[in-house]
Image (cartoon, rainbow, N blue to C red; front, side, top):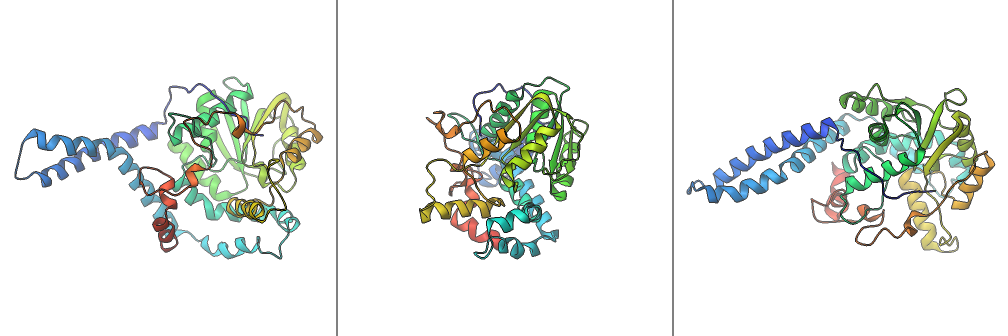
Length: 358
């Protein structure tokens, strides 16, 4: 259930990103000039100054933004009172805990997971908490935006429409889709920390009147019937204890004839339940993403139809054939020693050891 493909990109960039870039250029220029002065104090030729100045000015925005994000992240962690939940979260995946146990306690499981993971996600990944395949010539951020814009395009909405983001994280996709479509978006997450953080970012980016994050359980949505012109979910309904239950709630709040578009975590026909290696990968994904259970694609498509939807399309986007010269969705999780390959750099052995200490 992961439709994807080419989509137009609007010529709009977040005001905050522009401000950071301009600040970064200024800082980069200042740092470059200082470094060049120190390195060439015996020689005042323009030629000697030019090369290091150009390099540092070019890298300045990236270095400055990375520094600011890291300082914000460390400051938040230093005052966080959520770390005592780690053991309780891990207990949910002990061998004596079953899928039924996790489904019965899904709200606490998911809430605890995002209490622990949100700050790390934003620092290491960005404000859009999802994966995307990377096409030839794309940057990581461009792949994320294209993934969201395509989904938005499939909703078939016009400017001024009302959309529901069902499982929104801190609202990165909601803000991007709001800019792209001109729609108004209500975005729900079970986690209050994410609501507070997302609404603060929306206010900072001038989108608070267009995008609103609300604390809610998507198994019991706090909206009247037929409230929304369209609904989308990006890798979120996999947290539900009952797929038919969450899809039925989405159908209830969707206006007749409206579209629900979804990117979903699913097992494919290649999964072999008899393989210890496959079972281990499945469990690692569940633990790493706060999922009660991963199910086969057919379970999701049947649940959609059972809940009353007309299924228009369901496909595995890994089979779309767009990866020539690009990268599969999981490559950003593979370690790299290059600090320019973010977020891969944070998964190298040194960073992996440092993070628990930090």
